[in-house]
Structure formats: C-alpha cells, structure tokens
Amino acid sequence: MSYRYRSRRSTRRLARKSRRNFIVTLVIIIFLIYATLNWVLPYFIGSVGVIKNIIKPPQALTPKSAQNASLAPPVLNIPFEATNSAQIDIQGFASPGSRVRLYIDGESLQTVDVSSEGSFTFANVTLYLGINNIYGTTLDEQEKESLPSKTIKLIYDSEKPSLIVSEPEDNKKIQGGDRKVKVSGKTEPGAKVFVNNTQAIVNGDGSFTIDQSLNDGDNTISIKAQDSALNQSEVQRIINYSP
Image (cartoon, rainbow, N blue to C red; front, top):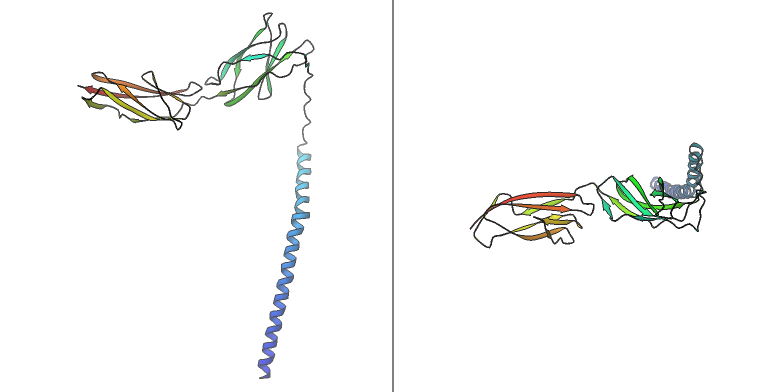
C-alpha cells in the first residue's frame, strides 16, 4: 500500500515538472520569435543593404539638362496609334532655325535641325515591341531644352492576330437554296474582319458572323483579320454551289 502511494506521488510530481518545463519552453520560444522579428531580422536586412551598397554603390541621379521655359516645345505628328514596322519616320513642327531632340521612354535617340519653314523629320526611328512613349524637346543655341512636347503612345506589334473560321468547312457543297453561305468564326477583340473585302461586325469577344453570296460553281471565300497595327491573318474556304 505504501509503495502504491509513493508511486502516485512520484507520477504527480513528474507531471507537474513536465508542465513546468513545457511552460518554460513555450516562453523561451515566444521570446526567441519576438527577438528575431524585432532585433535579428532588421539587423540582418540592414546588413544586406550595407553589403549591397558596398558591392554596387547607388548611382547618383543624373542632373536634368538646362531648360529654357520660354522656348516652345515641338509638335510631333504621328498619324497612327499602332504599327507593325520596327522603324518609322516621325515628322513635326518647331521654331524655325532651332533643333529638336527626340525621346522614347525617356531615352534620347536623335537630334535634328529644324528647317526655315519650321518642319523637321526623324528618319528610321527604331521602336521597341509594345508601347513606345514618344516626345520631343526644342533646343536653343545654348543647348537649353524646352519643356517636353505632348507624349504620344505608339504601339509596335509584329504579331498576326488569331483567326479561327468555324464555318463553313472547306470544299463544302451547297445545292439549291438562296445562294448564300454563313461565315462565322472568332478573332482577337478589337481586330477587324473582312470576308471577300466586305467588313463583318466583330463582337466584343472577337466573334463574327456574316452571310456571303455565292455564284454557280466554285466560290473562293477569303476571310481576313486585321489588328490595329495592320497585321493580317487570312483563311480561305472553297464552296461549290449548284442550283
């Protein structure tokens, strides 16, 4: 009986000790997490920043060119919003006898002279794929720049638009009826569709449907999709009609 009593006391003592050790361990873990988040981690991040600045020092900001606020900025003339050409000519007007500097995405590309009539041309300007932010400045005799002109966003896109013609199937034979065939399919939203040079209505999701008249015998139906940069995709279908 005495042995059982001592055994139960020993078990309770061990349980209390285990709970005490668990609480102490939990407190230590919480303290370590707190110290890591508030002291160790910020110090580590700061050290990384110091090392990065030693390896690659931050570059000093490039001072802006001297400006002449009284000098009128140029007017650039780009009559389209998108192109499939990697190089274009950019024309415009500025103060006669001055010079004009062209920028794309903040990078200076060319500087040209303005004619006595006030016109200028930037020849063979290379574009970047995607959106090109184009503007210019006028330069006086002291190379001081005017304020920037209005920025023109020009898209360079060389990829053909998608075009799926779901009907009619190629080499379809039609007999009798009202001499028409339904042409339907899908292209990318915003593209134009022409069926034998007749423009079809394109819905917001790119789908289109149009009826095409037929002549006796074989009829070649040309379906073209054209995006805003004038890239084209074309699909042809041969339809045979007999009365």
